[in-house]
Structure formats: C-alpha cells, structure tokens
Length: 107
Image 1 (cartoon, rainbow, N blue to C red):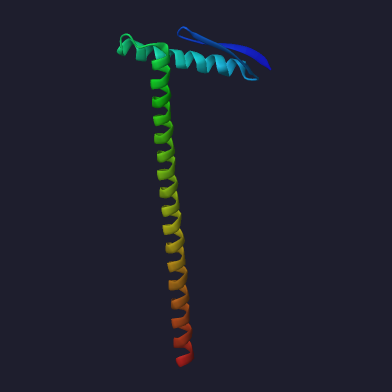
Image 2 (cartoon, one colour):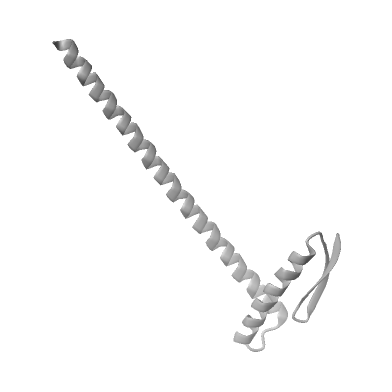
C-alpha cells in the first residue's frame, strides 16, 4: 500500500491505496471537472464545487444504470421473440408432419 496525496483545489487529503497511479489519474480528471465548474460559476468554493460535482456524477451513474436496464430489456425482448418464433416454427413443422401422416393413413 502506498500513501497518495489527493489535492483538489485548496483541499487535500492523504489516503492509502494499492492503485496509486489510478488515484492520481482520477484526481486529475476530477480536478479538471471542478475547475471547469468553478469557471462557469464565479465565487464557487471548493467544497460547494465538490458537492455539485458529486451530484452530477451521481446523476451520470443513474443515467448509465437506466441505459443498461433498457438495453437488458431490449435483449430479453429480442430473445423472447426468437424463442417464440422458433417454437411456432417447430409447431408448424409438427402440424405439417401430422397432416402428411394423416393423409398417408387415410389412403
């Protein structure tokens, strides 16, 4: 484990992590987003910017979850249709064979 210093705006903390480089990269990305936010809202403190960013990130998580739920539903519907179509084809083939057998037995 390594100790990583995270600095966002004027705020800093130290954390222990086995993924030091990942933490550094994520911190840089977050810092960039916070700085853009602070440019758009003059006088925004670091704490308020972090709270707004946390809300924005949570919204992104919800959107991603809803999108994946929707995609999963689409996949299930498609698979259900394929199974139903396959079953109907199987039934049609069985009926056709029964009809042929019936005609053969009738002769």
